[in-house]
Length: 60
Image (cartoon, rainbow, N blue to C red; front, side):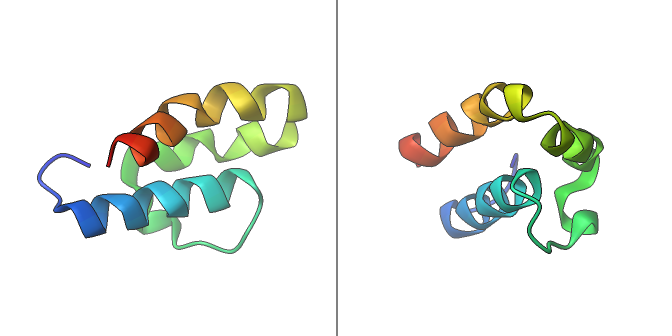
């Protein structure tokens, strides 16, 4: 997210959220965040994984 403009940051946040919800995304765009893809296999952890991203989305 660092160095991105608001529009690009929001798009990346949505890409991450979509990834966690098992939607088709471009993992290369997510960089290091793609390592959290496996969280989607653990429904009890999805909310935790999305907390910071949803907060960022609201702030932007």
